[in-house]
Amino acid sequence: MRIGRIRYLNTRPVYYGLETGAVALGEEWIMVEGTPSQLNEMLARGELDISVISCVEYARHWRDYYILPRLCIGADGEVKSVLFFSRRPLEELSGREVWLTKSSLTSKTLVKWIMEERGVRPIYSEFVLGEEIFLNNHTEAILLIGDEALKKRESGVFPYCLDLGAYWKTKTGLPFVFALWCVRRESVEREPREVKRVWRALLESRDYSAHHLEEVARLFHRQAGLSPGQCQDYLVGLDFELTLGHIRGMELFFSLLVDRGLIPEKPGLEFFPPLEGGK
Image (cartoon, rainbow, N blue to C red; front, side):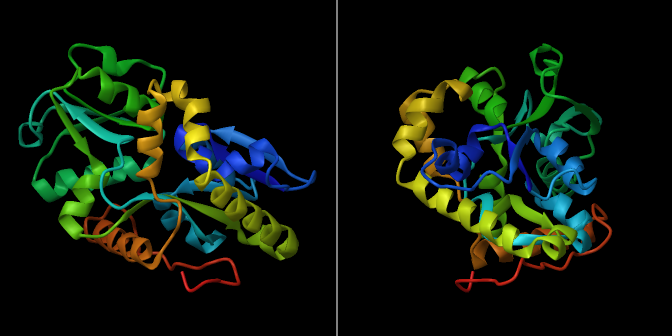
């Protein structure tokens, strides 16, 4: 069983119990690390069985996947690590170059929806983290995610910073889901019991981590250039439980993207059986 994991700090609270050995998963599995976009592609190609992926990636391939219930990376308001930085107000960005990270399909799609909703027509360019585009003094605006967003927020280089989770909450009153854990349907057909075992282990690891966030923050705060206290505050603000509220927010997001032509159809939300706990 091949399982995908994002390298960023925001996935530690799901995997920490597994990493420490507090939760046993067995030996018949391989953990594969990558950026969100890399894991999206690997799951689509069948190189992974289970992975955390962008929710928009699920929308594009929903007939090939099941959603693992009760797991997500989301926020009910400020997210702090999905940030749009700019040197001028959004309304002044029409006709100007806006850089979007290739590392997150959901985040860059959300930026495009926000721009459409505000009547702004920028010129989009994409970059890969590590290219250091954002250090260019001529960069007008840029979307950063994960650890890089946390570091840039602390630097104060850009005068304007839009937290995408907070913007969504203000506009809709609903939580936002940035990523889901999904399993390929063919993997379920081949090894349903193994998929269920991995799913339960991920839930157990997440619940273990929730009781050890101070420890997680102390061990990994340098990864994002934060103090242990800042790191813990950041992790506490994230949602890792996919609730009915998160599902409603995700359904609305997909409907809005269809209306704007940003995805071809509204996906069905199909969960790995059995869907337990009514969530």
